[in-house]
Amino acid sequence: MKALIDVHYLPSLEYFCCLLQHESVRLERHEHFIKQTYRSRSYILGGNNVQMLNIPVVKGRSKTPVKDLRTDTRQPWKKQHWKSIRSAYGNAPFFEFYAPELEQMFQNKTDFLIDYTFPFLTLCLKWLGADIMLEWTGMYENEPDSSINDLRSVIEPKSGYQERSFYRPVPYLQVFGKNFVPNLSIVDLLSCEGPNALSVLKSSAGV
Image 1 (cartoon, rainbow, N blue to C red):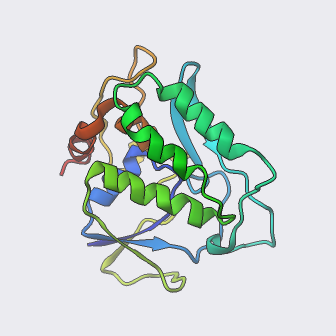
Image 2: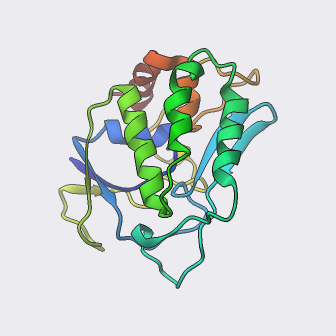
């Protein structure tokens, strides 16, 4: 079955587990932007516990299509996000391998949110070695075809992964803390597990 889903920023493990359970994925670019979601935020594990990385956006007219939404370039959030990631994972065993390309992604000059977050998704899929077919929506559909699993606004921070079956956490050794913190950004898993990251995801997804 094909999945229809929104584009997330440095997506969570649940997001990737969801992708792995579908034959192909259609990415929504015509929906109206929704605040306080994974569309513009991500979570990493730093020395002071879980840290949120939030992309500030320019407030436009009400119900702005996500494809037209601009990030707030007046704020130095790109530098701050990279600094936070480097501080959190600088000592992780595999971070050095991914750091050059990841740092380069934070230098993307685009003003548009979705044009900024989408390359992160494709880069992480490349690192994972996950062969997942991606395509964009051509228009917004309230009720997609029954052959499509509509997952727009389903994977969100406020709802929690426990309510769904995409992700069943398989613990791995993290940089900080004694207790495993599940469902962080894929950056956490890649930095800690490297080439084994896809196996951890598949086990967590039950595929």
